[in-house]
Image (cartoon, rainbow, N blue to C red; front, top):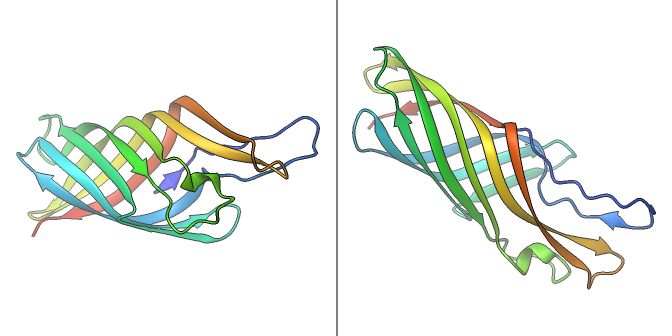
Length: 169
């Protein structure tokens, strides 16, 4: 995964530091996919290991509820286009009491398109490009820790790119 979006808050007076809660990253993840038919599936993200652009690592293991509905257009035999949409719900646990992420959950609605290519009988290569994202984020103005801001952002464009392989068992 390459996440292209980032929530950055800045103030013109330059007197405040800002905690960034939504940062660009490279990642690798695992998902659980229920394939109802050849054209319709439900995906649940199990874990994601992130290498953050500003430094550091992040690991989400069953801490987010990320669910996508995937519809593969029945066009072509080996390569088929797909569309998907879903939501992500994130709750931060074991955070410092000054960390506003622990006060309120963060949500995200997203949609995109892509393609999948049949590699073998039980494996498929896929590419997904998230094109729409509506998310809620929070940040806190430091040193005035009682000033917590909650905002929503809608984005249309390339927000996230997923490239991977799905295996059937």
